[in-house]
Figure 1 (tube, rainbow, N blue to C red):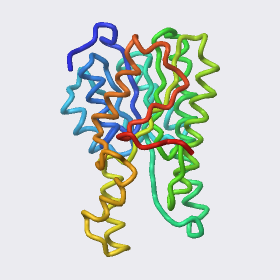
Figure 2 (figure 1 turned 45 degrees about the vertical axis):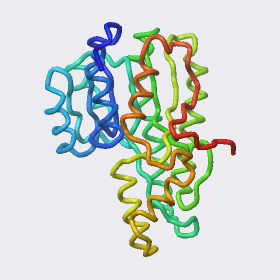
Figure 3 (figure 1 turned 135 degrees about the horizontal axis):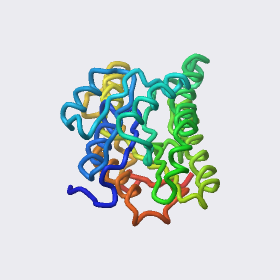
Length: 263
């Protein structure tokens, strides 16, 4: 992937950048010429990625808790000092614990909604002045999920939060349509990330299935019969960042191997 002249030197913020989809997105953006603030709660994986990408291209914003407006403001202040105003925001931070609905505690429900939906609200609101000032070419890309378009059993809080992200994406796209800022959601199916690897381990532990049987269960809705690769999600994000995608807004881009989204 070669740098794009139109993206050269622009500043992107990626939340949840330490691993999985977030790390793949950061790599793709840097390869295309952007400078990226790697935001997340844990310093170690963020620093490892920053070392890989190089100090000229990546800044670490550790302790970046998307549920804490004060932490967001503090992290953004340092990020702007390092790379200037933000013109691309990728809201990727999220968690996906599983439990039957009857065993979903109020604590689990509130936490997932706070991180997966509230985090998008808080970070976007804090970054929005930069994006509006940049105008045409500014981007908000929310990493939602196919769970934001259909229902899945045993992840009711996650489904509710991701449906909220899709709704917020559509509403904000309308508000910003005349400002030159596009707002889109990317909705991956089950993707090969640490979260999914943990889910596979949980299925094996609780059901006695083999790893292969657990994987087959997770991928059965994907006609290609496989997990999505994080790089495939990153490529969709990069496409939305490019100037040629300026008319794409308010959309939910499904990356799921042909999984039917009719709900």
